[in-house]
Image (tube, rainbow, N blue to C red):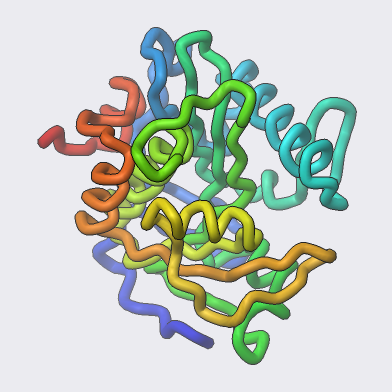
Length: 253
């Protein structure tokens, strides 16, 4: 393995084995879901799908729009949704919600101790095809932003939803005691994020996956990442809506 599994005893989550149930360090969702705050990050756990029908519908529709319609990837599409088997493994969804309560950005987090896209679908992109398995490293996948609804901010062209998702992912990682988040994205996304000084660290040369030149990258979780994203985006305040902030038990600076 590329990374040895560190002692997870201090972490606030546990897994029920490969593909088993995941328990995050989050409080129970408030009755009626997280409502009433605009332009913020909303957290939804996979097993809470029924309590967040509009958010789940908007996320899957956005994923279809981005991956199937815009990028032309061969993804699983059911009616208006892009949905795959990894959505069944109780992921943590990080959603950027605009003033109209619409999903304008999303990503999906799963622990690398269970099933992940990078290990179980895109393994050939890893050095020597060795999987990344560590309780301190989670995978981000299905990162998508609605270019028609998002707002560019910052001098380097980073968008509001992209910055919010980056800050939200990093904050979740810090809360869970992670060291890194690993993800796979295409070369265009890498160039865009590199221009904004927000690209991940490639762990191997770029490789074509399904005809798309792609990178496997690591993001270090911690205050330095937060400071870098805030510097390039100009976002100074908390990106979480109050209900998700309370669930994550984050400390307000």
